[in-house]
Image 1 (cartoon, helix red, strand yellow):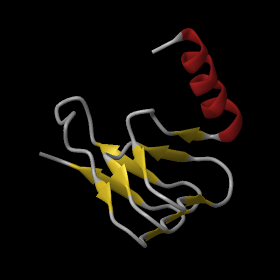
Image 2 (image 1 turned 135 degrees about the horizontal axis):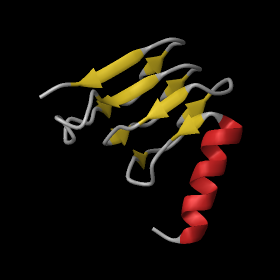
Image 3 (image 1 turned 60 degrees about the horizontal axis):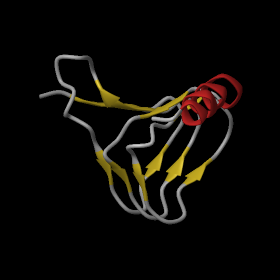
Length: 87
């Protein structure tokens, strides 16, 4: 990772309230509605996905680092949704 990426990544976390690593594959028309509280650590986020505030997907902890979710096409994740993978 470059220094510019690291700075921009931190600024996005601080000012936008979104954690979206570079390794997440985003398909077409992924919409992020509202501000903040989002941790989006998935393997892939499909076409036409709608994500609302305070949504979390990812791994539960360091004991399961490879359990990332695949969010399918047309999915809607409503406010306060938490999806974690456990191996």
